[in-house]
Length: 75
Image (cartoon, rainbow, N blue to C red):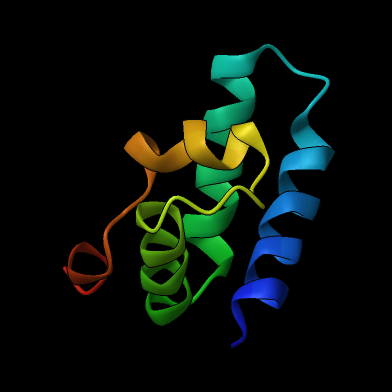
């Protein structure tokens, strides 16, 4: 998937939860990504974040500590 599409999708999810307190919103973003995104998509998102992409909503960055890493998804 293109980085632009991945960023747009992640940002749309973050926008849904943006009205919540930041920590709660970040957990909800991560929960959605963990539940509905394939491990490969989460891996691509983590790579995009690691690259320092400025295209991502701050809540996407805040969700990182709560994301299951792709290797963990198989467990």
